[in-house]
Length: 340
Image (tube, rainbow, N blue to C red; front, side, top):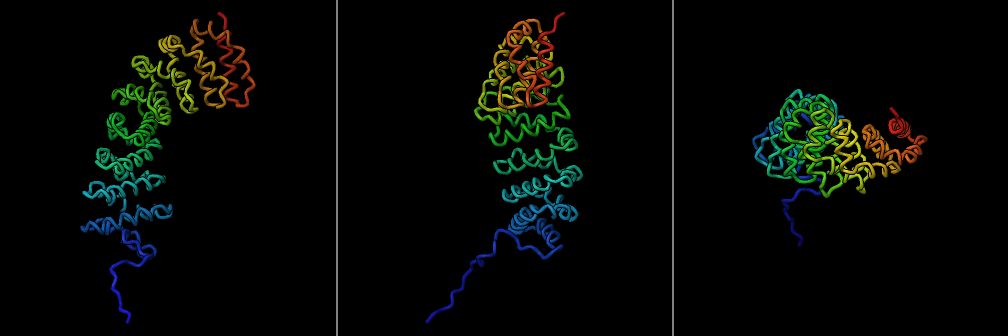
């Protein structure tokens, strides 16, 4: 005779790790209440369900109206790793939208998120950096990060973080340096960026070279790049296999060689031959940046003398299919052939 078996398992269509959503417009208010519940499992299930719910853009505005941002801000300091991890992931999803980025600033969420930069769990740190990077992509967000005095912290983290997180930090600093370069210079960012030029990962090398280009915009940055010997390393990257690395290295040299000190440092580092070779590169950005760097170097008599031998190669690009490259070639030829 068959007997009834009493099972403690949930039905297969029920996910016990997420709280069931209330119907319609009651879903988010209920989740918000559960995010503030004293019971750990209730908070875990609520934040898991919220993370999935927020991936629908239509729910972002409603979530902010319900006070979800403030609740997530409190959960950033929760003792449980799952709650911290999913809270930062929720904030990252919210930060992907303009209204969410405004909420970050309105509720002053940047400082508590930055505290997770020191979290012992890799995933919590990664999510925190993803959220901050997303906020930095708009000028008000970048200003908020600079105002929170996080530039020095971000530069310091570049020395010790995992490669995946280093890439996010380099992107964050890229956007922040459009707003303020002074704090990055004071934090010895140029030296840290230069050390990353010899990294094995081409993505990190490319982004470090791009950040050197950003930081070299002011005169103090150009002088600092020469001082920390960034120029020889950038010249070495001109022969890299990765197009982004070559383009950003040439772009950084283009900025640094605006000054006389930068010009002669690059000439001494034998930058002209590899730059001339890049004039025929298949990537338009590489060609354009190489031509602009050569234009700066040709303003020095020694550079002009050397480049007169290769001027015909540059003239071939006067009819380049990319207008920006053709324009850069035209200016380069004019400067190289200039006579006093």
